[in-house]
Image (cartoon, chains in turn blue, cyan, orange, yellow):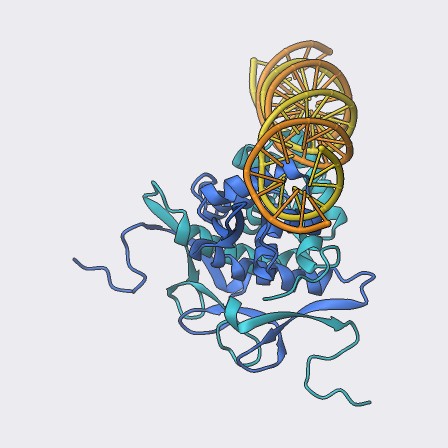
Length: 157
Length: 157
DNA sequence: CTTAATTAGTTTCTATATGAAACGTACAAT
DNA sequence: ATTGTACGTTTCATATAGAAACTAATTAAG
């Protein structure tokens, strides 16, 4: 990448305004794991109840979590991912890959991924949606495009 | 994914212990952009000098940034990415993709990626390193494996 | 020679966010 | 009637962040 695009409108800035704190990504990860209830999350993460309640509210408002009832009397809710939330999966996988590659000090076991499609323990790999080649810093340039443009080469009326 | 692996040893937890705050990822992004100096970062991000100095120290200690001199008298340094830091590129790209897809309110322009290999505006896509099929939540299971195991199917001596 | 400008911080002080613990509430079980 | 469980809120002490002033080394200007 070269040349800094405006900070305010950068999609990474906008994402981090919602989930850029110590807990949000961990909560989203936990919901992927199946840890979806207030108490379970609180115990699993060791987060304070106040901050947990606060982040749950925020992630709901952001449309990442939705609150769904799992029992009546007393009515209780758990937190599920919306489509928007589920679409953060690639972010978690790339984080996991990096953590495994660079931060394995003192571990007896590592968290790996098993791909149901091929059955193997695999690594996530980030490729170009068109030519399927790896997307490396040197091969990629960030460009600002008008919002209504298509992704194709031509641009006539 | 199903069943919560231990929180403490999760690679995502470990990553977020280093870069899980409002600024670290933005600083790393800025260094990718070419914004590598104290003042430039401070002005581009609108971060306080205290926190900036603090994060720069932390990211150096974590081996993500390195401080390299760019002039003598007075000696001045800029911050560059190490290999470990550069390897966070896929995390930034997946964040960017999500931000573009879900957070485009009130934008006239969007930050997109141009792939030098094919010349087109592309999206990053996360695929299996072995079978090259997309890695979706439903098709992936998180498993704990002993640190010395290989990724292959066989496991004889 | 003095003064201003540049770059990279540090210090100080105030505002905000976090965490721990106690409390509230709705129900179920004993 | 009391205890237990799940899901929070309130209160208060502490930690972190931000704004502004200050330091330091050096160059450039007057």
